[in-house]
Length: 103
Length: 154
Image (cartoon, rainbow over the protein chains, first blue to last red):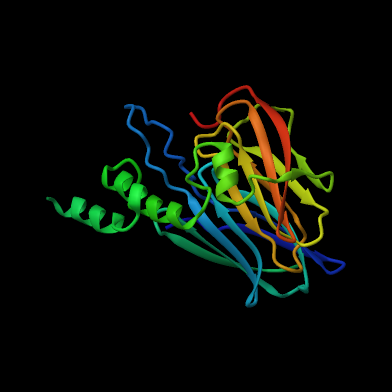
């Protein structure tokens, strides 16, 4: 089971600033282990962040995104106390959803 | 035929070359499915990735800024910022020219979200980082050379 995402979302003057880090190996499929065997690719392919029903940010990733992906973005229309829900899906079909209150 | 191979064949069905690669075990069925539904991510060269995104004719724009370090000492997490001042920006893509799969990320920017993003990328070697923005249906491009001292893909 993947670890929870770390998400901070602060609203100021109507703009919510979101910084998030997603624990995930983001294996590219290019690396080899100690014995020289390829470590299979395993990376997040899709990420969505919603404010209620509204999609506020979407991402598709390839294997070039760093391990434990970091993202920062800003959107309008939310207030302190509102909840943000983030959900990712990876190349093995695994997924995880986390939510945070905007402060 | 063992069970696993049968599953692979089943999963690979209808995916053409990607399916064949999956059947041969070169890429996983999940990767084949993901790539088939995600234009550009399976491209192995920058121009092929741009073409797959429909952006082969993208022009340079001064309303698009791309910030990345001149020299990346930690090439497995190179911070990249893309900011668009182009009205109608609804998509931002970031590519790394010499990575095995150049297309790193495609971001959807819905109405109400600012057309800017910061993320971190792996770089296999010194190369141009490329920002691509779609605004009112037209693509705009910016490039920045980044020197890598230790590869982030080894």
